[in-house]
Each structure stands twice: as structure tokens, then as C-alpha cells.
Length: 103
Image 1 (cartoon, rainbow, N blue to C red):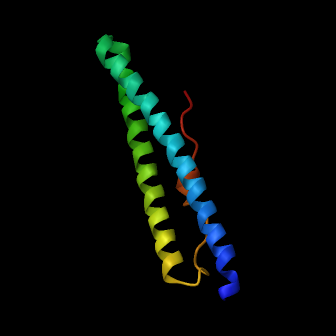
Image 2: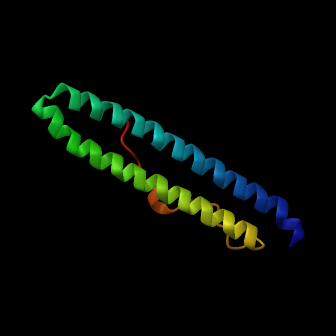
């Protein structure tokens, strides 16, 4: 299976790149959410404060997604290092592919 090593390495690298791009997108979205939450809090306007409930829930869900992506990356990396690569799927968990709120 040594001939499969470059293909496996390429697949693992592609998986990491896709996952890190997705993580960065989620973290960028979180930065926007946090800024909006802070602005709403500072405004002390009741409607803005009420809106923060939903924004904070969205932020928490995004954080869970990032944790899941990192767990998947860790697992994929461990499998790639521990086996011939037959069990490395190169695909993040389905819940990592959910859409997130755009600014």
C-alpha cells in the first residue's frame, strides 16, 4: 500500500484545508456576531437586548460547530497516522456542513 501514500497524504491535506477554511469562516462570523451583541448591549435599547438572545444562541451553535470540526480533524489525523488510510474519509461530519448566518 506504499503506492497509496501520496494519494492518502493529498486527501488528508485537502481535508485539513477544507476544514480550516470552514473554521475560519465560522470564526469570522462569530466576530461579527460578537460585535453586534456588544453594540446591542451598549445601546440598552430593549429590542436590541432581546435580539441578543438569538444572536448568543447562534454564537453558541457556531462554537459547537468549530469544536466538532476540530474533533473531526483530530480524529482524521490520528487515523491517517495510525493506519494505511483506508478509514480516512476526507470528509467533515455532516453537521459541519450546515449553513451559517451571513452578515
